[in-house]
Length: 368
Image 1 (tube, rainbow, N blue to C red):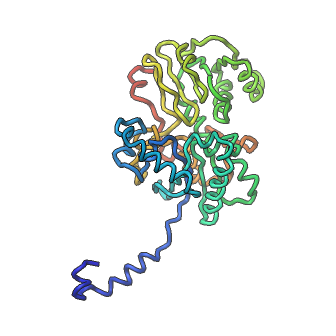
Image 2 (image 1 turned 180 degrees about the vertical axis):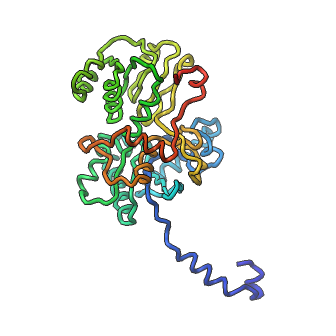
Image 3 (image 1 turned 120 degrees about the vertical axis):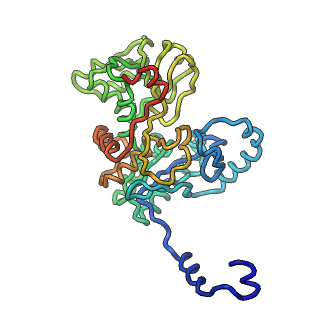
């Protein structure tokens, strides 16, 4: 209400009812929720709730943030230790569905703490149950919220609440499909290095079935992967000490020493949620599994962590596609059936998502 209207009594009383009715409007109900978390201290400012000048660019270190370290520590302490629930920090539209992104106020290092795991699982469980009450159709688990040691890629919640109507999606199928389709055509061999995750297993199985040799350096990794491959495809999984392949599939656990063993011009393809340290200037580093979103997507004005504008992680896109397609099954856990990667890949393309090819790779012709 303008001040002088209030002083002289000239305000229009009819507007009062409109104002009161606007306050009584129901809260927007999302069709899908993506549950993520903070990665580093500086990522606090990278959210849409932080600085627009930062959130509109991929997450990176800025010199002036070092000067703000004391303030950052205070904010992170208050946020992570006194906030006991998730909250909405972004709202988007994809065609006929509404997507909300919820932030779990924990940093990446909290997920390595045994003391924090129970708290984190409780927060995720509460978020899922609250979404269930609101008739949300899909909740996707981003970053470490789907950790195997944390909750078994979300399977813990499905087993605890077998009558859940909401569908839990870890996005592994699309992440695996994105990596497989990022491998240049004509590739005959790749080197696998990193932790053996659900995504890693799916990628290795797909490549071996396609006749591409997967070189594994460590014997224990070879034994673990061989147990998931059947028939004659096993011969394409090779235990080797050869670092010569020009395509490396890298997950968490890749060491600096191993990167130094790569040949000049090697393409590093991340298969995990987090990118490797880019130590080699004479090699190429792809982004973590991601896709370009449709032009019709609305309210996309910030970057998702280290990804570029209008690019989303495959795990997040997997949840969106699940909602768009109206699929009824869960996609989570190791024991539950995995959604067919080709099926979810084709569905993503059909809904307007596009593969992400880096300009540097196009220039060098590595995509062919």
